[in-house]
Amino acid sequence: MDMQQLQPAGYVNAQPKRNNDMGATGNVTVKSYAEEFPAQRVNGFYGSMVNAFGSCIGTMGMIPCCVCCPNPYKSIEQGTIGLVSRFGRFYKTVDPGLIRLNPYTETVQKVDMRVQISRISDQVIMTKDNVSVHIDSILYWHIIDPYLATYGIADVRQALVERTKTTLRQVLGARVLQEIIENRELLAQEIQNIIDVPAHQWGVTVESILIKDIQFSKSLQESLSSAAQAKRLAESKVIQAQSEVDSAKLMRQAAEFLNTPAAMQIRYLESMAAMAKHSGQKIIFMPTSDDTKTHFHPAAEGTSFSMPSVQVAGGSGSQPSVLSYQNTGKN
Image (cartoon, rainbow, N blue to C red):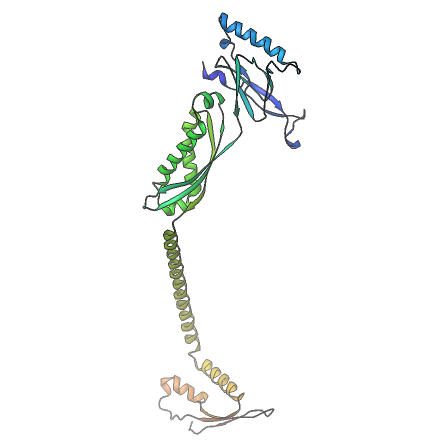
């Protein structure tokens, strides 16, 4: 039988779940898989006789009170389609709803067309850098060709799960642990592209693959934690060293700015004012402005210089401080 004949032939109206999905007629339009192949009808005397007898029995079974004859009507749920076989040979596809079958010669097999979810848990994988990890992933897929998915392979779900496990080992085993952690989405997309090729040959398509969790051993977790802590410590030391360098540059600029007679005189006056605020008496020796010029300028070395004495008498209580100055040198 030609596989091209199993392609969708039209559209069917189905009841929606939400009002915003409805069209002008109040129904939602979905793909229809209904198809019949007249070339596969029954031929031969025995087949025709049994088919006619089953039709008669089915007609009597339509009567509600007739319990001795099977009911020829079967219901197909929304989201599934039916593959009808006659004498074990497929000959038509039916959409969701109520269908009539020959109770003796025809059987229907329901195929779920909704998106399926397959969980792949606790997959042990050895990475390229010889690290053993446990991978939990989820596979989303749905059937696009019910004939191939039913009659072309024994168990399409098991086939997809096993193919996904093999591809996970192949792709993640060729990567180092750091790359698996950082590029999880890109690796999942690569695995999906590899699986989708044989999946189409089985009549299904892979919607997406999600790497849900990556589990490590306890020793590996401790080593990764210590490595991260050492990295943060090294970064903090680099930041501290950089701040010290910046502080030294600012101190050097301040020293160059203060290395002038006027700036030094201001600092002397500020120190004297700060000392005058405390109680008690202090004797300090500070040069005058002329002595400062002599001290900081070598051209004035010939001038006699002596350190003046300054007596700071601090008052107690509410008494103000007294600042006296006596020059004991000669100008």
